[in-house]
Image (cartoon, rainbow, N blue to C red; front, top):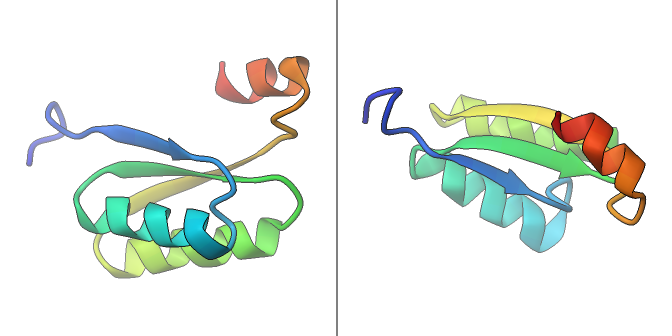
Length: 76
C-alpha cells in the first residue's frame, strides 16, 4: 500500500478494551491510526506502541469528546 492509498482511522477510546483492539487491528491492516484517549494517556501510548511494533503507524490525541471546543482544537 502506498502513502497515497493509506487510510487514516480515528479510534475514540483506544486506550483500552475494545477501542484498543480495534485500533491495533486497523494498524495491522495498514491504516494510520489516531489513538484517542480521554483519561489514560499511558494506555494510549501502549496501544500506539503495539501498533508500531507490528509495523503500523500511529499518533496519540487526548480530548473530551463531549466538549466541542476540545474536539475542534485537537482535530484541526
